[in-house]
Amino acid sequence: MREDETVGQILRDARVAKGLSREILAVELKLPLRHIEAIESDDWAALPPGRPRPLARQLAERLGVDPDFHTGVFRTVPGVQELPPPDPRQEKLERIVMAVLTVGSVLVAAWLVVPGPSLGRKVAPSYLTTLPKATLPPPPPPSTSPYPVLGELLPEAPLNQEGILLSLRAMDTCEVRLEPAPETGGQAQTHTLRVSEPWRLRVKGPFSLSLDNAGVVNVEVAGVRIVHGQNVGEAWTGRFDAEGHWLRPAPPPAPAPVEPQPPDDEEDGTES
Image (cartoon, rainbow, N blue to C red; front, side):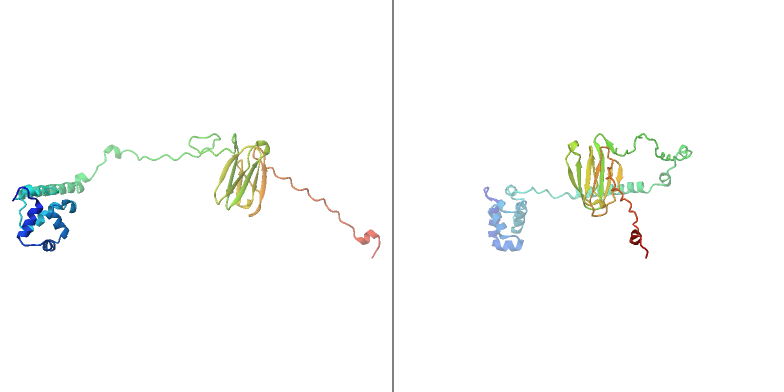
């Protein structure tokens, strides 16, 4: 063996000495022909990652080349250094240790899961058995005081410094137009009410409220429900003062009573 020989040259010379072709080796070893050509050319980059060393050893065993005899040359093949074969005595010792640990774990688990009678029965201390059972006090009755109580949810003020509380809830679509009085300097607002979609806001000063489908809208002004009496599809407009009072329109005057007219024959003074 020459000192400058490579793994590929050693394997190629062994193949030629045995009179084998690359094609025959490829069929016998079930390897692509290009892999055998790459090994004999020492083109390790052409082989799959991590496969140069196993493929070179497989080809050497087929050609009768001892890699241990050419240890220095085969170390140049890229790949993970193969570990020496395990020691049978070391393997036997490891199996014994694992068996002992397994049996010990099973015994400990059985002792914890299936304890003895004295361990499984818990006796309550004597002082606990003499104590009366704790009972929760009944809830306090609802407060009737006019003053707020800590923890109670206070209703929103119908009228405060921010204005009059206006609340609208519709059962169908309705167009709403809110027009503040000219002296307030406010701007008119238009809003579309949807089904079960409330609209709550504050309005300062007198205002007028217009609904194009008043029969489907529940109107509350300053905490008071406004019964406008309109049906579904009917429009309604209401005016309210600075405190949220509904300025109802004056009812039309009652018609004058009609005096009964005498018969024509009585007027003429004739008898039938």
